[in-house]
Length: 181
Length: 188
Image (cartoon, rainbow over the protein chains, first blue to last red):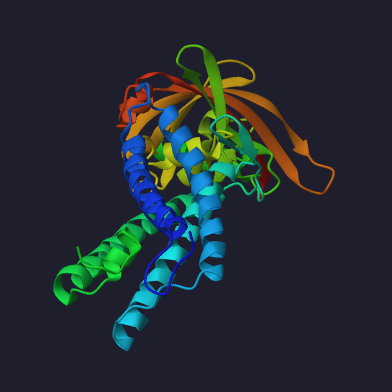
């Protein structure tokens, strides 16, 4: 369950891969739902799903932040430069994810409306400010692309560690053991 | 003979009274003016909204209403249909394309009185970069000195436009939209 000296525990791995897949899915869903015609049967369900998943991801990310604090990351055999760079990219991804979700929340709640999560839970509006949806909308759009670019960089770095450097960095997140398979 | 006609005309001129109309600034600061729209939702109900930000002025002489004129500039991004997400969609290229066409303007080209207190204001409406002539059925509501030392005149107007005529894409834009205008001006 917990991280070890050499690999990530299953909670961290599940959070990492679950959130990774969801966020990529959310990016695709976001672009797709924006392209829908008004008369499409998914015109309402698309955004409903996007908002609901977004709120769940926000909770998961908050939990992940706590989990990260109480679980030291495995030690990898990497150079100080790699350590600094990866730390910077991870930090930026966390920051972008939170800003992205906050911006999305502000689009939907700018007029004071709550966000309905799967028709069950209402997340109330914290700030009602007419016009906020303009800034929040633009921010949400560009942050999403920036996050995808960083995720691409992150994935390339993982592949670089696995295939070029042949260290256990990717495996520590895939299987929890730093063994090359 | 020609000279005497000119002379007579010159003499008559001051007797014609104050021919120049007064200029009024539309009272957007005090929010005594609104640009409202009403559009059909699927044929089931009417959706109402407004443009929160606009400026304008008009020239008006109660004795010669047909000599008047009016100009209005509307900030398209200020559209408010009482739903933030929908407003973002309305600003997008699917509808108003507000980033490329941030302003809509109305410039009157002629006024025709149709009754004691009614007139048709014809003018050029430009939105989405396209200019079309529209008619606004106008009713004079009232005018006079306000309690704070100013002088005001006010009108109500209605017009119907089809957004698709201005190049708005999509099927929704083909349905007519009713405009309802309330305008009060303060004499400058």
